[in-house]
Figure 1 (cartoon, one colour):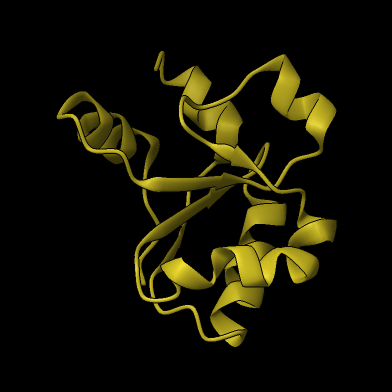
Figure 2 (tube, rainbow, N blue to C red; figure 1 turned 180 degrees about the vertical axis):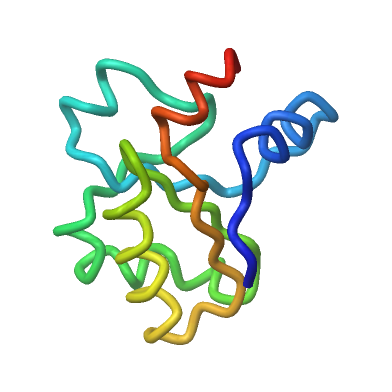
Length: 101
């Protein structure tokens, strides 16, 4: 699945959509700033949270981190585990906030 730009995500949120967003940053990073509605599941804990995410296996999941590296790893991992519609937020939280969103 193609990644998503901060502008596209913002537009969808503005239209009232509530996509499933997973923030794979550490809890302290999530506390400093977050995308509204994002669930914080740090990358290192993703394997143990798979059962909690099973209901979304065939639904769109948007993953993000600070700059896009950890979330790219999360996307690859979830895809390997059978998730069919995982998208990485291009540029991560930094790009999302830099865009004035």
